Length: 165
View 1: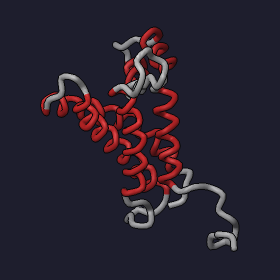
View 2 (view 1 turned 135 degrees about the vertical axis):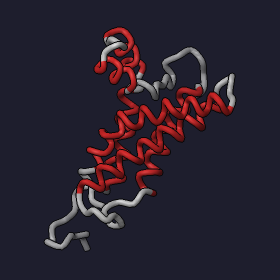
View 3 (view 1 turned 90 degrees about the vertical axis):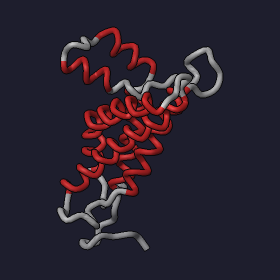
View 4 (view 1 turned 90 degrees about the horizontal axis):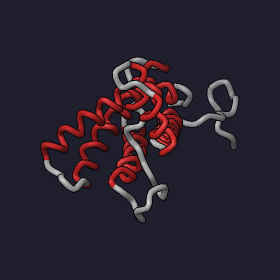
């Protein structure tokens, strides 16, 4: 028996959390890639708003086999942790079924908030993998992760609009 909605048509799209998680994976995969990171550093002006934003998108930079060091670096683990935590928060946060405001607005803000939280927790947890780990550097790193999540999270929020609650 096929899954149908009230009008009887088959559902052919994923959940809001699922589409948001895929958007987070694509965002980290593309904007954290070595090619994008080197392009952003070479071709953008950090003093301008657009250049600052394009460089911020490169925050979850990863190497995964593109460097000479075998194994996972702390930056690689940060990128993986960001995707895992984003998916986790998107599934845990309430969607339109539990929200007071039904519809897309709730899905958008849930996706955005999930990515902000994922960015903050990722920065906090991954800062302890660095050589000079301390609680003070963890708090400072969290600020950068939340900033990244706030300015990049709207992309995940928009992607969350494409799924069902």
